[in-house]
Image 1 (cartoon, rainbow, N blue to C red):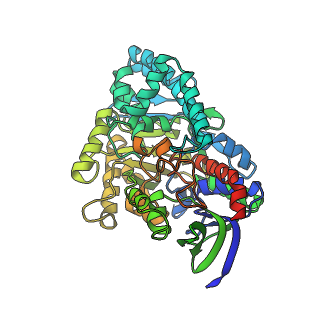
Image 2: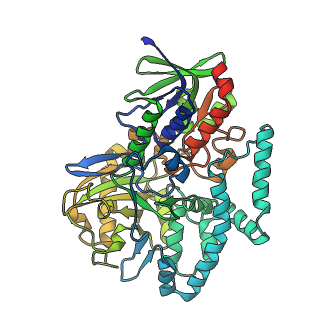
Image 3: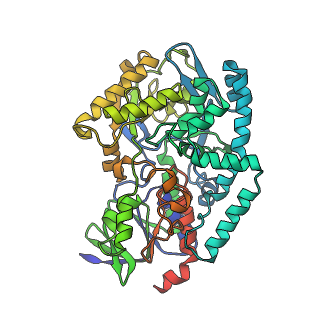
Length: 530
């Protein structure tokens, strides 16, 4: 075994949250080493060639939730990041002539009014209800939630949260409670009558969430997708030129400029624990010693595979073995010889720069969930298609295009196993999209299909859960990843969690990385004495 490599802080996993955490620590003067199991930084936010001449984001695929403070602090634009807005935010086709668009400049309301004047009024009321709730969420993105059983700082955090809620009027408090406890369907049915209008908003409730839009708690998942911005426009969605890998490549440049050491092809085998404290890790037969260890991995994997047996209590081990992880997400990239022509809106136009949502009603989404539970995967899948080459010609040869297909619901456990059935599912998805855009199937000249099992193998995310753990009420806020340890400090001295399994959860936000770094810096004196 090679001689040990000493550092102040060792970070396991060079995904976007790990990179954000590393940057803040290095900027504060700490010596930081990152260990990444793959040959490229970025975790699930990477860009790869998947067919000759065709490149695309492999897993995560769109920009909105990346926190503006992280972008500014890391100087990501200076390091090459360029984000452009979709010309239209969303396009919902149907099998007939009907469709719905959404976007800036009043487009969403005009489109809703085209379907129903009453629903346009409902949209005004819905937007007002969301405004106060989303404002509170935004206030807590870059803060650790109150920690159950914590000390004075957690008491103060609870008081801050209480003050935030007390600042709401009675109806706003009722809305807050509803969005944290009810189903998205229950709330949307209150404001809207038209199926396709409800589908526009309800889609966010099932993204990465193996559930029906009528499952309790799905309203919070909807909320989680609303607190972002792109190119400085709140609530907008955008595209990173060069794909999602452009974000993490810019982050890696910022980290290296700050002095971070990034070691690739270094899969961590085990965390070293000495005298009841995390003291480093073993990767590729080499020992890396550190005063603190930060894990940018799913909490289930952290406690089930990396923390040695007996290092934490049996209760903790048992609890984290039961950590819920399942997003039932199937991710596919396709190379296209031509743009799709949807029956609802067949001519080329700005709607093809949108998030194209094949899921025209909440009932459709509910049936996708129930059929997946009964039959192995969704009979009529929920699909969001993006065609980023309409905004970024660096991704495909001239005249050709690439499309991302993000699909629900395809559970991790499937009869016969995903190695044998991945192509069957991919064919099923392509054939289904072809019903809405005849000729789509014939235009596919290459593809990369990743089932939940393939996502697990490729990116090390248990059960292919894109959020590092379900975003249910039992795994949110002060309970993420568990009560008493929502402050990024794990139940092993010197061990911290900085990934999406910590507050505020999944998506390419950088927030868990930022927040974990603040916790580590607050403990800096104690860490440096270790």
